Length: 319
Image (tube, rainbow, N blue to C red; front, side, top):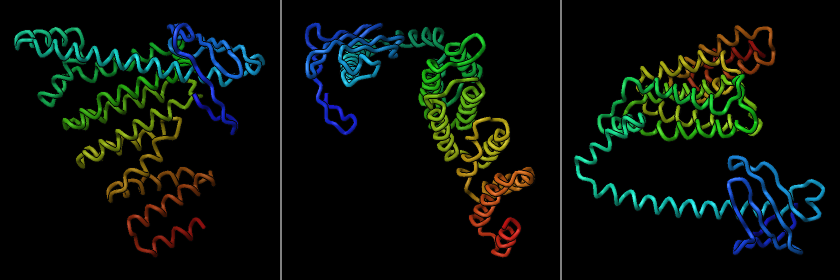
């Protein structure tokens, strides 16, 4: 492995043959060839690094060294290669088994799968009838509650060690379901599901030091934009009502900038102008917020191509 640390080129060889590197669910051990041979141990907890040690002098002072980094890179590459090979083999076996099924056997198997896994039934309906079962939203909310229970403690708090996994699973849930729903024309259902995920993530108490929440919100915004591009005027109005109503409730301040930036057609700009006027009225005693909203108002008025005389009056009013 070739690493660049503090602008110094460092070459570290990680021997992967024989017993020089061993990977288990709890521990990675390796022998690293640097200026001499160093032994590296990395302890894992649910595939997350829980502690590291190296026999080099730099690590003796409690520092994370280049040898640890080299082992992590090598372990990641090795693990990924093995996983991909296994996945390819499994897929080949499954494909062969499916092709050998008779029509009656396939139908029976699908029915059994839908009974055991409700998501399978939803997937089949979505791709055959472009519809969802009546219980689809209930099942979606149940999934969200299960994820909250999985990663939070008894008080409902998601700590630092579980926050990234929690937001990652929510993001995977969105990416696996929403595009297919939009493609099938179920854009309002897709919008409601993204909103449910957003509320679940922003309402729960969580230590988001790693920034996973911000990544999840970006994922929500990406799906909202795609949904908006496929929405009719009636749904656009419903979406705007949800965003404007949520602005005052959510604590992170993500929704308002997204709403003002995204709804830029004539109807959206007029709605934004009415929203800004309301905020200006509420911000009379807060000069900083008043200034920001006044700037937003001018930008919207210019985008609407309102008469210059009206724009000049606003400039003079908030000069």
